[in-house]
Length: 315
Image (cartoon, rainbow, N blue to C red):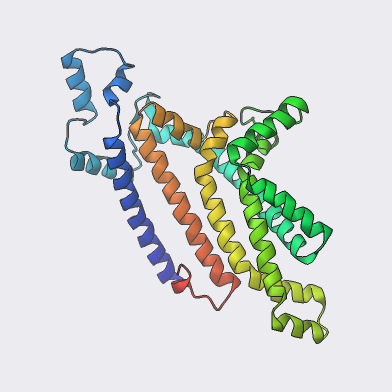
C-alpha cells in the first residue's frame, strides 16, 4: 500500500507538472491583453502600462513567468485576480464549497439510483427491464444543459417545487437549492452507470460457479451478494469512478444554468474576462481532483477483488 501511494503521488506530481505547463502555455498563446482587463479597456499612458507590466511580470520571458507562478502556487499563492480584484486563493476558498457539495450530491444520485436501476433491471427481466432501458436511453441522450432547462421549466417555473437559482443558506436550504442542479448534472451519467451495472450483473449471473452455488442449495440472497454483485463490482466501480471524475468538468455548465457561485462558473467567467490567474488555478484544481478520484478507484479495485493487485490496478 505504501508503494502504491508513493507511485500514485509521483504520478499526481507528474500530471500536475505537465498540466501546469500546458495550461500556462495555452493561456499565454490565447488572444487578449491582460492590461486591458486591468484597466477595464480604457486607454492608459505608456508609463502606466509599463508600471502594470512590471507589476505583474508580463514583460518576463515565458519560462521565467511560469517558474515564478509555479513556485508561488506551491506555497499556496495562486496570484491575484485581475477582474475580481482579490487573491485567487481567497476566491477559490469562497467558491469551492458550492462545487464540492454539488458534485457530492450528484455522485450520490449516480451511485444510489444508477446502480439501483441497473441491478433491478438485471434481476427483473420483462416489464421492469424494458422500462429501465427506456428511461436510461432517454436520460443518456439528454446533455446536462438541456436537462437543466427542462428541470427549471417543469419543477421550478410550472410546479414551483424547487428554486431555480442560487445555492441557499444552511444545510437544509442548500439541499433544496442543489437538488435540481444535482439531478441535471447526474442524468446522463446515471444512465451510463445503470447500463453498465445491468450488463455486468447479467454477465456474472450466467457464470458456472453461480449456477453451481444455486444447485447446492445456497440461499439466493447470499449467492447474489457474494458471487454476483461482488464480481460485477469491478466494471461498475470503474465506470462510476470515471463518471464522477467527469462531473468535475461538467459542473461548469450546470453552475452557469442555475447561477451558482462555484468553481465551474468562476472558471467560465474568468476565461471570458481573460483573468489568467483564476483560469490557471481552477484548471489545476480540476486536474488534481480527477487524478485523486482515479487513485481512489484503483484502491477500491484491490478492496473489492483480492485478485487485483495495487501495482497493476491502473493497467
